[in-house]
Amino acid sequence: MSFGVSPEAYVRYMGRYAQPLAAVFATFAGVGEDEKVLDVGCGPGALTAYLLSVGADVAAIDPSAPFIDAIRERFPDVDACRGTAEELPYDTAAFDAALAQLVVHFMTDPIVGVRQMARVTRRGGVTAACVWDGPTGALAPFWDAVHVIDPDVEDEALLSGASMGHLAELFEAAGVRDVHEASIAVDVVHPTFEEWWEPYTYGVGPAGDYVQRLDDGARARLESVASERLGSGPFTVTARAWAARGTV
Ligand SMILES: C[S@@+](CC[C@H](N)C(=O)[O-])C[C@H]1O[C@@H](n2cnc3c(N)ncnc32)[C@H](O)[C@@H]1O
Image 1 (spheres, rainbow, N blue to C red):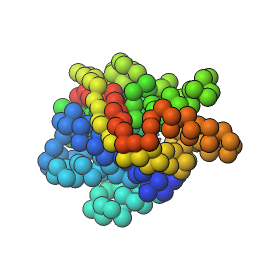
Image 2: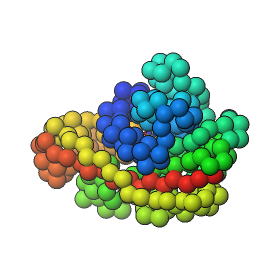
Image 3: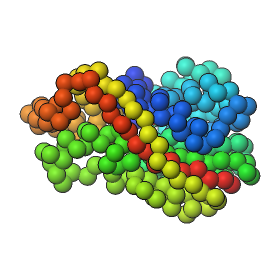
């Protein structure tokens, strides 16, 4: 998966949705001041930044070296380390809460990953995650345009947690209790089509991988189809995600 990219590329591609989502997701999870919170799959720090802004004591982990370097540079006081959800290098019950924003669908084994998140959360604490809904998530306008050209291509809608009820099932299978799932959403205004499109050419995540595999002609055709569908801008993308939380 293509997350070995520069933090700047990620922020322009996904940070524009992840930053507003962080406030909605952290509120859904119910974490706040003075709580010790683990940000699993932290990326360059959209959720970390929000958690710090509300006074949480944050630790962050991600397998991507450039993202962890970015976290260390942006937030020198945050305990940041490279690693995966499936093998969290923390003591049992070390945190008040463990959160994963837009990560469960990229875990090699989501049940093991969520089980590890629950293990490092103290009794009575919160484990929570969110994943874009396939048909209405942040990347849906991109994949909708792809499907016009290539109807059989597998998009991100089939990934773990990207449909109603799936995140809750994963949480229950991982042993999390009192699981509650909800739909959360953010509205992001794109001033121009170019501002929306360009980050898809940076090679970030499955959509970026897809664009990089296209030859010049196919890439221009996809850009033109997307432009016809979205217009020249400004336009708003309403990005919906499934969020689940439960206790340990
Ligand atoms: C879409 S990004 C989300 C980043 C950040 N949470 C945000 O909201 O902007 C997915 C992140 O999951 C990380 N990731 C991929 N596989 C992972 C795993 N098995 N465990 C933890 N993180 C993982 C990637 O490196 C990437 O930073």
